[in-house]
Length: 303
Image (cartoon, rainbow, N blue to C red; front, side):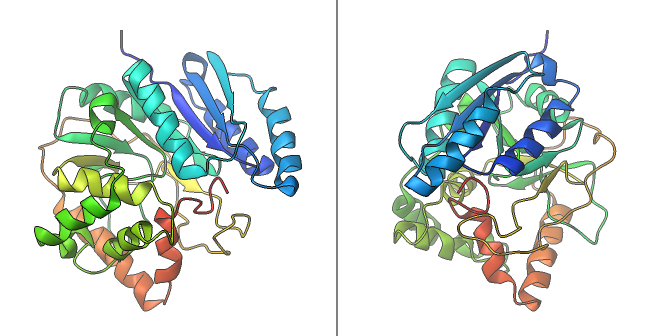
């Protein structure tokens, strides 16, 4: 019998976003067979305390999943530490995990796609993770494709994949530069991921995601993407601490589940060109600063 991966939901103080995220997950066909683990970060201020308490009151009312486990942090960990700790704990306990944050609306077959892909590539060491979000593309992409590295908006992995996560941003940067990989890491210099890693090292951002991407990239690992996004991010509405209002990441969510089959273990030329084209279009629109929020610790998600 196929394993149903536990879902980890990370949230902070945005009640309406979390409600919409949970409702979308509950509408998934595998919700009733899935265990939901909710990691509620502690307040960072007295003002946030009220919002966190309201959110936690709602969290105790959630139904529709096989089991619900609520982890209420007494203190504020911040999103990076919360995700690293939560993902590590569940991977150690269950061997695999599906990760969502409090402003991600998932398609009704998101959980099916994630679980099926986790099964298909469970014993394929070259594949580090499965991803649900894909940037809007003017090109028609294959139902599924691989890119080198890892990603962070609606994703899944196995214990063997997450064990590659390297906390040491400075060590990751040294490897990128000594091996001459920064240009490739930056999608042929269309996106400033290397600079984001420098900013993480300097303490300007507290990002787990840039380190996850770099960790997988340096190990030549692949992440599976859908050709049309299974996830919509609703957090770019000014409600996050570090983000303004933007429709840059809006996508048309897939109306059918992408067909899954075991692919050759190579990076997709089409997929990579589509990402580079997207990044270039945003540079032309002078939106690079907003795209950089993609890897920030509190990036319009859990504040």
